[in-house]
Image (cartoon, rainbow, N blue to C red; front, side, top):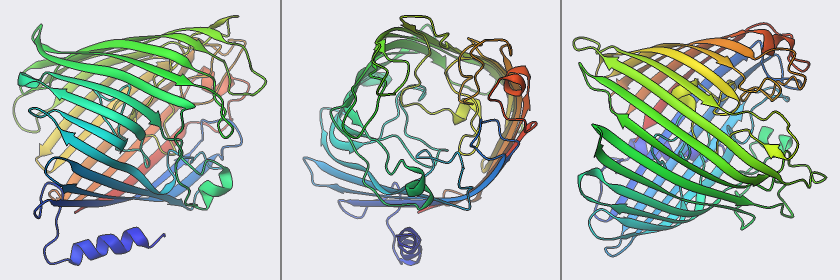
Length: 443
């Protein structure tokens, strides 16, 4: 299996008349890509047993095919995500490893205009991907089985309706992950996710999006859950960046319902959920060479203080985070959970083939008694304070062959502060240094 993806891509590359993304030969379409990444972390921020330093070489291969039969279209997509060289105690999990998985296999029925109904396995981006996302930087992706109805109106108006059984990526045991074992992902009625997401342009000089989601789960014979029965409602207003203009992106959401504090079988206490999340960013793009854009933003999401009968940590659902919080993979200390974090960013585009940015971020725990963001570090007494860290991050991307071959390199320095240094389970490893480089071939 390890050679299958590489051989397939080699065949496509040498094929005299390949069908590539965006091109069709009659009713058939075929697209493929392969991304090879080398990443390394030193000065680990995660508690033991995560190793102080770790290195991983990963390969993600995607092959997508479609057949347009006229009244319906058939779509299929395989992702093969594998990793090598990582430590036996590595933090690499099903977010990085998921060998040979059919993430999409659906029937698409075209409706009036650009509207369509998908039935089967599918991936999905909604809004700015802060609640539901198809992954890009991460090595594996969120996927669902169910129905997705996309109703498209004129002038950019759109309504997405979904009913889905989220996939449980497998294998999820340490030995299976280290061995890149092939095991079919599982979906079941034990976890159901449904919702609506609407887009309405031309509102107060920008675009308004609103959404409502429900996540309903229960323990199954092969799945331990926190028995979440939570609703999420939110809204977003944004103006896209443009040369010489100001832009903004403001979003907020609240969660409510019932959940348990842990997934332990002995935890049978249903708690009242009340959590929140806010994102606000304001930017300005300068006209002229490199079109620099300066952005100020803040992200905040509630944490859980362990109050009797209440659970207040915001649930990140099926979101993506790299585009705001920095690279994940072996890194990824931040997410939309128990965090208050302002950031400044400078973005540049030296040419049509290159783009880069450098960013600074500071992060506090919203509730000093809860685990801090995605670090796993926690001081239940709150005596270690709330300031977690400062982060300096940079990224550079360049198309070596436009549309075909791209290199992406980035680095992050996490300057730990009191919470990440003094909490009882914080590792004494100094500041965290992380870097990666990857090469993506698209066919």
